[in-house]
Length: 552
Image 1: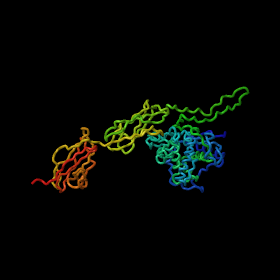
Image 2 (image 1 turned 45 degrees about the vertical axis):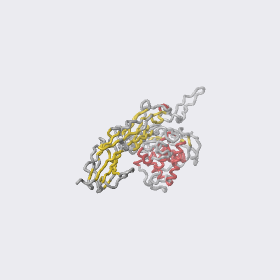
Image 3 (image 1 turned 135 degrees about the horizontal axis):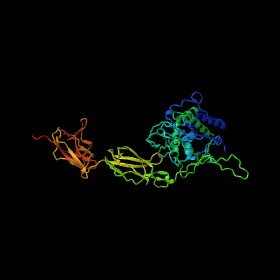
Image 4 (image 1 turned 60 degrees about the vertical axis):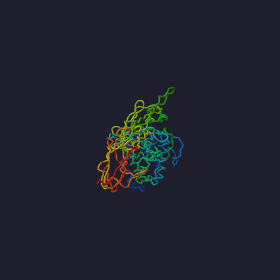
């Protein structure tokens, strides 16, 4: 077996000098190494344009932890595509992860051919950021079995980045954390996130989405990644560290020389970062391979046995039991969500968290979020609440209160900080209704031609005998006949500009169910006319208006 570097690189824990020596050794053992471009000189350098600045690094300059490449070339040059599933897991790339890198390269070749993005660069960054998505622990769609989260960026040993996503991606509503196979911080993902597997979602925990997003980010500012200077600028914009650049460059050079595909779930899993999340593999995958035991250097004595070999690495943590693994959340029998404007919904949203065996799972954080054009809110005026499931796996959202905006809106329930499908509920707010409307008095309503009606028109609306407040009412001066239409003569209203109008909308009954109409005027045509008032709900009343000259 070829010699390998025994130390790992961790930003903040390993000096730049050590990294430089390691990369120099790589270059010496593997032939021409990757040249780090400088800003002043070199015929293949050009201005990179308006690329992301150092202050907006994709990872937030978060820490990373990775092996250095092996000291030998994995395959002969030119054999890095369509390789058989063979070789060691350490130098191989899991099948789905490798497919995602190549798919991203093809996509950028169509949308931004001038960038000349090599998939090996994505592979190098993916190796450094997540150990090729933690050794290929991804499902059939390319989504990691559990979110990959970097340390909390709270300024304690790491950068200080306050929360930008209300915990939607990283589950932390106080500070940000780098998320997913390519370790995007939430604010960067919000700008650069892509749908690489065409499932209609932009998920930082999906290798296809993350790889395509990383490709777009690296190609920003009209970069040509075939040029050393542009490639270096791109990598530094991803994580502004010369040590990081050297490490990525060493893996990039290694993968350009060739690599091979290994089955998903069999790649090497790097140790977790301090404060980061080390997701356990799914129950269906085998544990990652460990280094072989080192033999006792003392030769065995004739007729006697040698001492037991000691393992070079401690045993891996066993995967969680299926009964403890969250598989998702589901509707727990929530009925139809309908309420009248201003009222509380009688039905409350209830979800159930289930484990890999389909059984209930307690102590799961679930976030309920109201979405859409609505002023409906949970009890207490909140548009989002986070609660924890009980021992039966269920949790019920607070009472949902309808606002004045009618129509449909959505409520999403999702396991907080997890890359799992949400349960989506449709809620409907209907307008207040009345089944009866009548005048509050029976005075005759008269006016002289060209004058105005002295008495105001007041009506009261009820629903099933009770006061109907806030009910929409339409008032229209109508013609006689079987199919009445808006009258073009006779009594009228005035709008805010003093213009004549014979239909009023957006009228509503008050808290006591009553409505007093604006002043009514008469034109010069004498006669008997009709005023019709109609409520939301279909209740109608027709009122008679008389225009006549005063008696002599």
